[in-house]
Length: 337
Image (cartoon, rainbow, N blue to C red; front, side, top):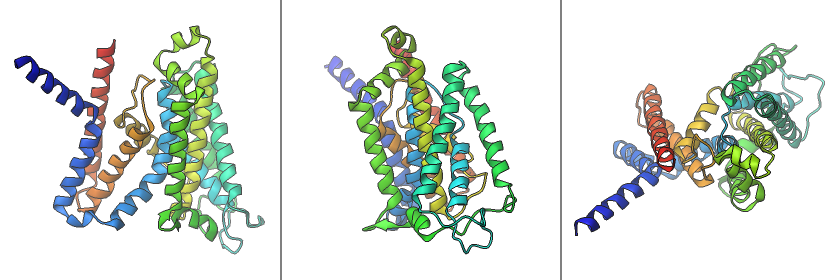
């Protein structure tokens, strides 16, 4: 009887550990709702989904890097660079402070493709620094972050703009970030489609299996014939594309852009991935977990503001959750070894 009770208790503890992120989300929602029942409304739900959408796309890109066993501190600056690029190409011809005064109005697909290409180019730079030059990912992407920020600031300061906030976007472009299809926001639809695509690639495509192998043990993957350098470079290019798209959509959602857009977003993306079950050691992670991780931090940010709690407490709560999540992850990894 004692053994049965001990086994049952162990199973409950293991279940709670494996589903901690869901329990945390439920607990946060309950606490906020108790303080203000209006939190459980369709309007609030829609706002949370809207705010989560671009962050989810960002986190999807970051997830690929973490699964490879790497890290990327340049994501936020890539987002900001893409936002400025998209904003400068998506302005109305009648706008007084037009970035390119002689540029005709362009189809919205043009700034989006431009952001994707720029993101992929910056991701390639990360891949070369990390995979080819063997610079540790933490330091390498930090250096690339500074290069990107300096470069986009020079671009943003060009005549005649001179570092003025970008605005006056085309209605079709702004609608992409604020409009909806039968009540479902366009950016949420885009985020869900990308999330499904990532899930399929990671679980049913050869590249996904190869990526998990590289993240689990690079030496073993190399011995088995996998081109580790190539996989790492592809991962950073994919991440760059996601960051570039996020920047274009974030500018459309907020209706403006500056060179400081995206500051700190990379840390939120990394935190969402880790809290959502991605191992800091690489090789472990899933799309649904990352989506829940993004939702948790959005609920914290939105919910604490909704009930009037000092915004500085958001960082305290987020920091505590991150530390606990990493501690659990490290403990799991130690047991496996």
